[in-house]
Structures are given as C-alpha cells and as structure tokens.
Image (tube, helix red, strand yellow):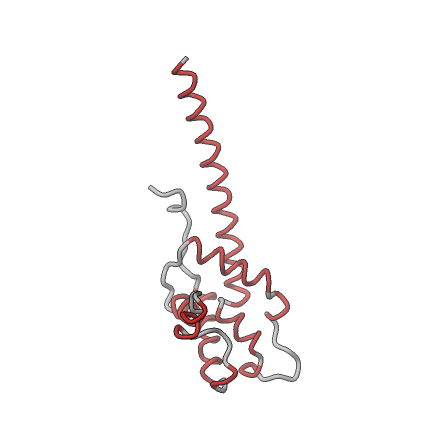
Length: 141
C-alpha cells in the first residue's frame, strides 16, 4: 500500500467542469494566441502539455501526486490570472483560459487540499520511519 493511497486523486466534478470550459474557450482563440501549450509545443520545450492535463481533468482521470503539486504551484504563481480581465470576453483573456485549463478555482482548492493531505502523509511516514529505525538500533545493542 502506498502512502497516498488513502487520498482521492480524481478531479472533482467542479474541477472537471472548469477544465472543460477552458478547453472550449481555447478552441475559440485564434491559432496564434492560444492559452496553454499543445502536445507538440510542450514537447519542443521539454515539458508536459497543459492541454493534455486539462483533457485528463475534464475526463476525471485520476492524476498523479506530482501533477497535483504542479496544479497547486501553477495557481500559486498565477493567482492574478484567475479572474477575467474587465472588458475582455472569456476567450480573449489567455490568463483566464490558462487558469481554467489548470482546473480553475475548484482545481486550485482541490490541489491545495490534496497537497496538504500528502504533506500530512509524508510527515506521518517520516515519524513512523524514525520509530522503526530507533527500534532497530535498540535491538542491535
């Protein structure tokens, strides 16, 4: 059993809806000004595709612990982009669309919760490991 097996890593319905909305808005953007990287663009930069991750979220496919950490980190860095700029239509605001591709506000809330749960599991696991090592040392005396 893995230390994160008790954590639900499946995107919530709200996260999936935000990602779907982001994908819909991205389709309306001009080719030269799309939010998020396509698989081809991401490969050229040696990174993962935001569009593929959004598709996985939209389809409610279970995400890895590392992906949830990246979702949280994205939203931590781009907090100012989460809201639609006044005077812009949703598909015109690349920052807003990119935020939705990362699951929007719901995805950020879910990522923060999952990362907190992982940190608690890490802390618990580390404490258990220390106890085990102390007992091994005592038994060798």
